[in-house]
Length: 455
Ligand code: GDP
Image (tube, rainbow, N blue to C red; front, top):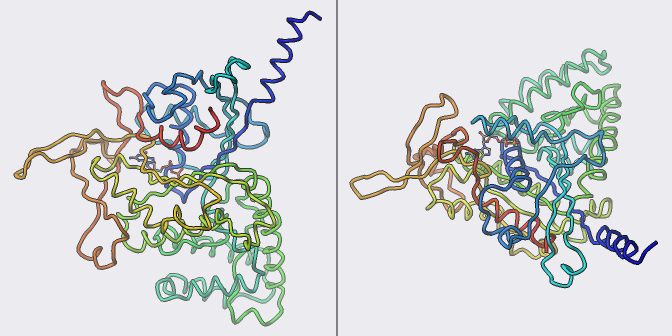
């Protein structure tokens, strides 16, 4: 073998060793904007057309491009990027996340450091992205419970004054259930419980609705693993076939659903994006906003790095960066973007400054993955006022509106009694001047998430 061949072989081997791998997770409660965010992020990395000034690798013209490659685990659902992008370019929103899906990208870039550049003409970053419903993270506390303590904590919530009336029919059905139900009766009780959870969720009455898979079953739809509901506290002391059966299902749910999710997916993530639709919650009212905050706090427990966390001993997650995204910022006039960010930070109770999050770098951004309105001005008696023009999601009709202001801190219940927030729902904005969907502040998100791995 000639010296030249040896040198080039050594270079290829060296390059492979220097290539990097990063696993990114995207989560948030349904409707938060995960699908749109991920679709936009993949498009920007594979066919960047928009200028991305804060994404340094592109700004420094070191980015050579990205392609989608096969997932390492081909049996796992692939994130349908191509279909989603096509829907966006047709001016429609893609279908939302219902289960877990993955997609892998290979990014090529020129190293920043002159010495590395001498060694390698370019390098690769393999980016594995996992999209999953935030509802699944809300099951974590169940791992520290047994069936009895779980049942008690569920009914403490369901019997609370805000929920009791909605939960009464299921309570009555459960109280009348036979101690040894037939399989069909068990199935009927399980589906009545799932209906109750769906109703509580759709009316934004509660967030900690377990098991989370009843709301987002994905591949478990129809599985006996989901025949799981809490018994009434008064039913717990007596042994019964029903109790025995539910205890078995509870254990199976812990071992076959919750644990594998953390072990196989969550524990392997390096970085996490958590999305929150604060504007949607403001529209729905005080309770919805409180529910969103509670969900964020529960999700954030996964990233608090205190040594005392029992679940850390089980999985040792290695997430080093968490990005909190207030989604749909395009539904505001630009002067309100800062308020949206401040509101999100307030809802998170400023984890950026809390000791327990310090091992994990956090950032919060107000982002529009897909812009749905153009910004303009209207003349009013007080002079020019900013406004938005977009096509209403319901009718497709063009509308010019002033969407209003965002409070910079959690608004009180009293405020909602005399003020109704009404942020619009528009379709993706396309026009002769803007033939492809565009985004806002995705470059800052990309820089935070990937910048240090593309140096
Ligand atoms: P998911 O359930 O978290 O996957 O949420 P989606 O990404 O499917 O978003 C839910 C809905 O929110 C979409 O159908 C859109 O109506 C809206 N949406 C999502 N992202 C954006 C955005 O960047 N801007 C605007 N204006 N609306 C968005």
